[in-house]
Image 1: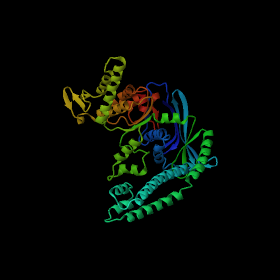
Image 2: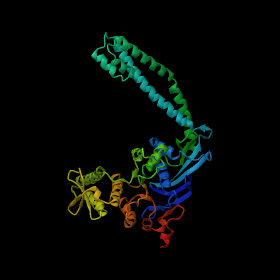
Image 3: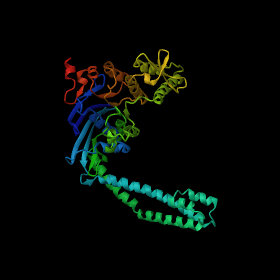
Image 4: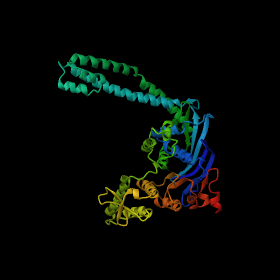
Length: 454
């Protein structure tokens, strides 16, 4: 996959942004530069959130967070356009902010269908609980006292009223019958009040189908509501299967101290509060967003899993070709050791412990530099997740890296992960100088004039 063009009309500090990326360039790595406040991080986060979250409903809350303060200037506004080459075919994705109606139809029908379906799911639970209580009432009617078996059945109901009754001393069978009958009456009322939901759902689904057909005729997809009056749409010729494939190939890596625009306003405030933990908000987002990574130290578990993967590949080769050469393990160790200055890394025979050494002396993790740990985390992230044929957006990768390493990281990324396109938001002249001036993308004010003259 390759992102060929980005066009952003207006989003926060970004306005009339237009970039093209040349697919024939080698390496396919493009530094993105500006002074502080120029919008580099905003750009990467916008691209990531739109492409990674739009085509998975469970990720839509992050789109809502991102667009929470988007100004209401017009009924239909183009937010961003992307030209993407996927499987040697070009697709344009235009993300549009629209008012809450289209072609005389109301987008609220999407919310209405969701609400009714949620109610029906709740209705099914009520029906199941009602049936269980009916069974209990039937068993009570054939019993003359509260037997141990009957008491067990009562406790399984998990109703607060029945639970309280089990703690009442000398409660009679009639007492239990009365509570069960009251509960049955309340469920009957709920079930009767929702008896028309099925027909209502069919009506709203028909409206939704008509609206979807109207959108489809114009190459449009409904993504989500992000407030009561506006929705996000996508205009594209790609079908949903292709869009989900594209979504799964977009990654974002950034410092954990970054303010992430796709978090909620409440979560973003945590970074400025001494009474709350911003890292917990980031961890929650990383759980929901598979392709979101922060430059934290790679855990020993992740390193060991990388060794396990390499070992398993060698074992598969041995079974297929009847010759064990251990090339994947050797390659992994050689690549890791290439950037650990005069140090080596391996694991014990049981693959239960990561071992760092300098010569024959075993080291502790704190004996490694910040830059070494950061490189290790990036390498393990790329290798463990087998990131390939992907768009990888990386913010401030140069932090903690020596200027020589900032220069070298360009070639290392391509070596570690050959088939990916990297866009690196950076302040590093050294990183930019590792490539041709044509590779470098600039957000005003210009970042690399001096570098180019040199």
